[in-house]
Length: 214
Image (cartoon, rainbow, N blue to C red):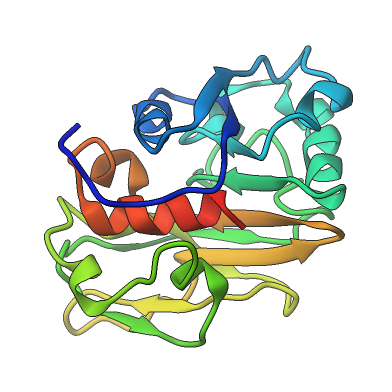
């Protein structure tokens, strides 16, 4: 991973591996201690020691029994933690609990395949400002795509600060969803951090660091 300039307030992060990615290594590069979590055995008490907990790509697709273990993760967010869930596919989804209630977020096949597709800010949000202030240049030099399997609908309680689309396609506003849950946060994102972070894209580091720091 090349040298990047990004700051994160999260010092201890739990990671639930899904289909396999290198995002945990990128979080370590931001200065956090990263602990691989067994989603079955980790206790609510143990979860409370983490500043953020991140689910790897397609974790809700590849773990057959994950549905019965989700409540403790949402409770972790309710009690003050930051829970970040990376993309899943609607096909072969092993749980309906995407969010704090069933069927809150509906997934689609929507994606933005052009890595330099324009990114528009729909509303100001701390995820775009703190501790790293995002600027127009931070959307440059991304790799392969912007993101995939964006949600198509979500409850009004979620903030959706970003809009993007491929040339001549309709705008997609579900790439980044953020909800204040009790004392903490739940984040769902289809942005392809699993590609951008290992490639050393500084803008993606700044944005992910901000999410960890919510």
